[in-house]
Image (cartoon, rainbow over all chains, first blue to last red; front, side, top):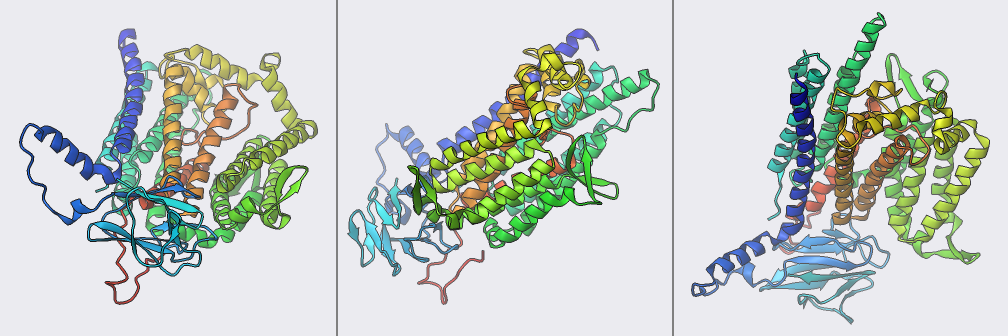
Length: 163
Length: 456
């Protein structure tokens, strides 16, 4: 092997090593920019951008589109930062290990609260917890609609529905 | 819908494999060996192990993180390239001295990689849900402790180069502490998730610092004393540092109390000073760290050769096969980073550090997105294990901190370490599959005849 060829191989190896690192970073970036639950939303916004010159079609009334809010975000408490996509199924919250969100909190009950979809909005129902489920500062007693952005307090955790 | 990204993972794996082939060819060409004789067998074996791991992830954990497996594979491949390169150098030297050519290490490392791959798959097949591990918190803690004491046992324990951390069964030799660190992490996670509320909230004031009740602290302090005591008797600084760092960081993450960091730091400084003034081998390490050049012919030889190697590498490196990494004693185990630094330069070392950073970042990301406290603590603890190990060994090799014998994850020659790190990646991927998977298994209690509870 000539000296020149070896130098080229040497630099190519370093270049490819960094290409791998950059490749992984790009994968990560896509993962962050297009979080799990937002893919439908972003597709919709892309479509509408292209279609702006045309007259907008009357929006189809489907169950999915009517539901406000797409994810449940824990904004305070031990699980802060956790995001649970809301995709039509109900979400259960409590200390029981089979809950969707398992909160380890002495102030929460095993099966504390469930959140489910009903007629286009998200409804919170307390499952007979000891310390109650609170929307903002009001303790709920019956299934109550949870508006987007309203703080839902369970034990020492606070969560809210975000779009 | 959540993207699974399994094809991205496959593409990155192929990229890593091609880099491996190119690197091996470069070693062959640069050293004048020509195309390595068994290149395609070796490359084929690596590809087979990686593909099996990928397939198992695809079937058993389709939502798992897509980049941890390729990054771990690339690090293992870089290690294999460097071990092969050192084999070539050793054979050369043996030829010059007219002594018998030593058996190459690269094939046994390849075998260990295959075993690590089998265990990696076993984690996915045997463990459907990481929350099962929580049931065996104290069992794992006990086994972990026994494994750590094992090298002190009379017949099977072995002392190599002053540190008693090997166990020998027949011809097989392994370091039980590597496996123990995983079990102890599971124990810490399971224990802390149960007790963190009382650890964080119930406190008595002592001299203005809020201290937890002795009752809450008991088990973990006992575990800490035993592990630290054992490690002083085994004269293994690195592992002792690793366990202590892990212990303090997990307490901090679990309780979110900064006072643990202060208590930990005070304990660390006290312990370090005690070890420095009472143990000759610790004192020797510190003296060499402060001024390696005075002892460049004796105790400082290794670190001085490592620094010369890194200097020789410079910015772009000497090129694979064109440096003299074999001049550093233990180049393929403790000092593999200085060998890679010499041949790939600072550009290559930074790429390797980036790979570690990505792996650890993904681990912490798993911890953040996980929906149960045990999984969060376990993922964070496993990532911290990796991070501390990388910091302690690369810091030691480059002269930033006193040198302690730890293996470089994935890169170093050695079976126990390779296996343990692949099991860590498998556990992290298992947890990440759980946390990224959309929750579709739930049936509304209204629809179901009886309440359906998913098995844990």
